[in-house]
Image (cartoon, rainbow, N blue to C red; front, side):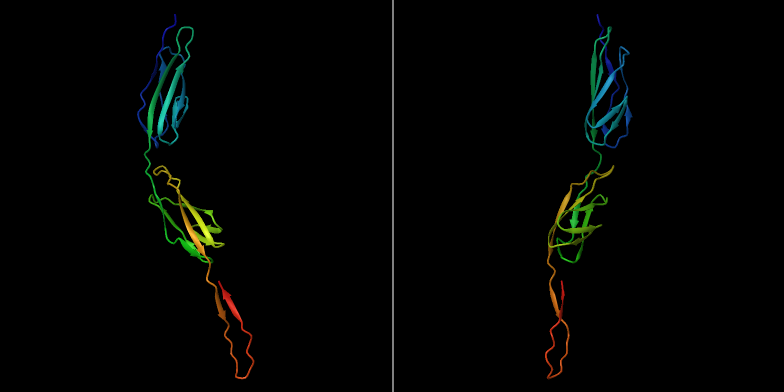
Length: 193
């Protein structure tokens, strides 16, 4: 007749997304080796648990297959990983229009104070830092993102559409002089825009 065995696990309290790796203690009353697996936002190696930095429920599953003297045994322990990082918000300020041939400084900031990354989603333009230069008229769509850090969650991605209008065409006649009685000179001019 096989004996029952009990798997004992030390209590694991609530954790946060910023907590470091920790060690768990567990054993079987039979002194046989216990296997452990994990579900949720964490990894396990031996008896060391590594949190992945995401909130959620972590469940540790313990098992001992038994042998000729002991019945198989299982146990599970769950704990919560709570989010401790703050949210952040990206805002755009400044113009939503620009004239072809001119530069536009794009202002995108996060209330966390962390740097915001800008990229062009649509439109023919060049973005150098936060200075936008259009290569054609039309609409340029920009995306602003901020991936977060150990204090702030990633920000919700924001987009901004900028309308690029045609530059005005300016025709400047060249100054010319004529003496009375002379033929009219050819009209010459320069174009700008």
